[in-house]
Amino acid sequence: MGNFRAFLSAPLVFLIFQSYLVCCDITDGNTEHLKREHSLMKPYQGVGSSPSSQWDFWGSTLVTSSYVRLTPDEKSKQGSIWNTVPCYLKDWEMHVQFKVHGSGKKNLHGDGLAVWYTKDRLHPGPVFGNQDQFLGLALFVDTFRNDLHGMDRSFPFISAMVNNGSVNYDHGKDGRSSELGGCSAEIRNREHDTYLAIRYSKGRLTVMIDVEDKNEWKECIDIGGVRLPTGYFFGASAATGDLSDNHDIISMKLYQLMVEHTPEEENLDWTKIEPSVSLLKSPKDNIDDPTGNFRGTPLTGWKVFLLLLCALLGIVVCAVVGAVVFQKRQERNKRFY
Image 1 (tube, rainbow, N blue to C red):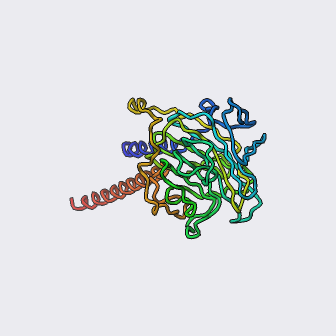
Image 2 (spheres, rainbow, N blue to C red):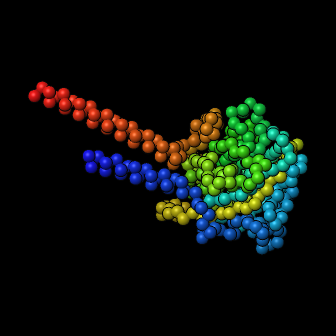
Image 3 (cartoon, helix red, strand yellow):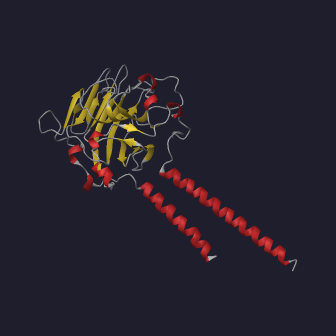
């Protein structure tokens, strides 16, 4: 019996340890690894058009002591803010604190904002205030539904896109044909700020969201096979059309992730990598299920943990049933001797 308990306890310890790693995967904002040259924080020193500035802005962007407003709650506005220092980190995590609010009632607001890691900066365009056919990564916080046939998801909707410069963002379909995954998030007109964590490490892109201001991350996107080069720029942009909102950035904090790479990876010229996704699924698979997660996305750490836990419980049940059956059979055999 002691050996049986030991057999059970080892997998349980392993699973508990794995779940701890999953829960702690997103950094808690260790200031030791904060990269200030790529971070935008109050009181927004180093923002402007001077040669020494680490951030500059364009369009309707207004920099105050409390927030950077990319667009006011007015029609037909575009604004952006961009880091002037290229990022050469192989593994990083960006925390974005933002707020979207305005006087528009339900479904009468727009258009949204985007967070960028791209080769080019300060190129205004039709994609939430930035250029189309970009090179790099974009995270879209889309607050207005354009595709009236896509009623299987609610808005605001957060999605990710990796582009090698050859793909157009399809506004009419809300970017479905090129998105890697996403989730719905009620981020408008909250009394508190919203937090977004974008993590890129070892070819894996993970996006987490904190809407309730409870210091608890909820998974939004988790996909492997993502290839992003170094030497690109971080930025944020927003746009309004016939409908509008205030799109405010409170902070953008970049953290370096301490990750070991193989000698082959270290010797690779990461600036020459072409943005791509090897595990990109067919757009037809990008359909929300009732839980808000994509059926087509790969298994995440938490889902793997639950799957392993169910498998372990199944093994335990089978073992107990087998033991009972074996004991009954032994008792029955004793009657015949």
